[in-house]
Length: 562
Image (cartoon, rainbow, N blue to C red; front, side, top):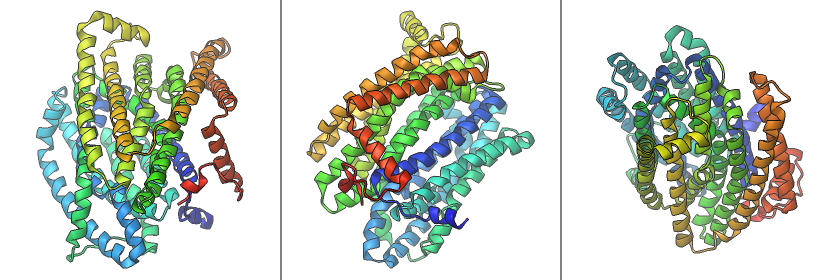
């Protein structure tokens, strides 16, 4: 037990080591999230009831990003880093002021939202017209208002734990959150129905925050209610966070619009969209989110000390590794999509029709995996540089694509038979009703690719130093390995179809697992043949972490260690 708590409080140095810790714990969290989704799929299938569950999150999510995100990690860490150098007392007063202002603001917003949710739900989700279902949606949405309140406090506390580089402690929060949803599905759903699952969500958000309290209290940094608010500090935070809030709100509004489109489709469309979105979030969390989070404190420190060239180099290092890892994953997810979905979700009420549609949506989502990871990195790079306005304008502009592309493709799918036939044939869903749902991830992915292109152009222009050139070799190496990996996996899918009984869950799993392993081995061989720099760095960093060697020096180590 003592060793466990020592690990919780241990400081982590180095961008790769921090990224691997975040990535490993993100993987554990995503494993639980997948088990959570499997339970939901088995209990409800892609049904109208589960549509209500997912739809109920949209309004609380909007409150979270529009209000609770004002105490976000990305905005507060630079303040903590600066204040730590000037003494603990300054941080103490700053925390009390921010905590008090946030608490009052969230209470006011939550009360207003509680009153107006019935009207907003009717407007935002026009496809849910049945009065009984509308009443259930309103009840679930009101219960979920606790979530942004607790998650906002968790963000505030996580800013402290990350400023002290306690990445392990920070990464436990989503694991506990998903475990509580699983508990709600297993133990509370039989007694309270879908409301029991929501109870699990609320308990999970509370513990998401509470897990960080022992370390915060130990450091004497727990925010306290104060009437002597440092309004200058609050003003500075708001000045930086309001553009960021609108930046996040743009993406959430896009998802609300996409959910609105799905509500007008066949029952279960919202569930299929969310299942596939959650599945593609697994590699995104492990790769894109982990690297962007691990890089942020280093980037903030480098920019704050005026080392702008090293700042750009660190963004380039993180971008190279996001590309290096994401492209092969895209290849495997597209080839093994049916095996992935059937293995993870294919039980109970989740039918073969649900599997085929979700698998096709998953393939379309993963096309933009690199773009989504780089977008997260670009946003945090701008925040580390104290510029929250540029990501705001870029995301607001590209939200037009995130909303417009799905709408455009829905119209094309419904009115142009050639396009309709092409999409259904490509993903082998010709005889599946409700295939129009594929237009949602297709449009969303194209929007994310457009977003990445705009971010890339502006970042290269704004920071002058050569950001793009080091990425070209990585793009070529990773694309080459991804093609080989996907080809080998595809060939061996057919081979193992004759070895295993693919009419059973075990057979489907073994078919995809064995084909995937051989594909990965082929990709690794390709990286070795190409003498890929990122592969060498990853191997050495993992060797240093696992075997605790003290003398391993990575090629970029001097630039990475904070």
